[in-house]
Length: 262
Ligand SMILES: [Fe+2]
Ligand SMILES: [Fe+2]
Image 1 (cartoon, helix red, strand yellow):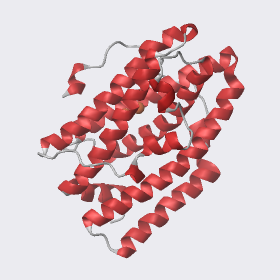
Image 2 (cartoon, rainbow, N blue to C red; image 1 turned 90 degrees about the horizontal axis):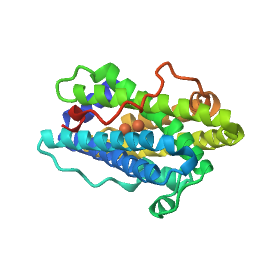
Image 3 (cartoon, rainbow, N blue to C red; image 1 turned 45 degrees about the horizontal axis):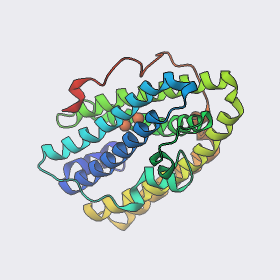
């Protein structure tokens, strides 16, 4: 029963756990949308061609936030408060990863190094988003309630990841290679730790809502720690490597599709 499919089915089948799952997801997506919107507005003149892609990235994340809110709305549920220990985006910021919100609130153009920081942070977090959505797609891509949302978000996250690879490779060719390499490694190390903490916290909250036994919770915690140990030793490369994607200019194709806003 402790398969990813079984666990998520349990979460999906209970209104309170579904509400918490969607609330956490919507909040993370909306924060990502805001960050990207600010970065798009502050792109330095030398990288102006990136601004519309960053804006598109932000618009996609905002759209994902609306999709998760829409899923709750479909069941007549309101968003739940997001526990601080499940707030992935905020915890990454507190770990010093990515661009600080205080910096993004200022109306001062970013530097090229700041854009490298943004793209490296996105390369790592979009890898996570894309893998998580791929897992949901595998098990719930045809689900009558969430299948359409899952398919759409999974497609978008793959595009975000492709865009990060392509733009980082472009910046590496322009002379930022060492900074990119170092930043990717710092981001990946911090991300796998924050992901472990957030996973433990989410499962603790879900366990309370779903009345999981102590043994089941302990097994889940052990599983999360095993994933961390693997990622720390061997799994980080998938977050720090750069490969030119098959799909080029994944975020250059104009405005966000209208169907997404429903
Ligand atoms: Fe997203
Ligand atoms: Fe994304």
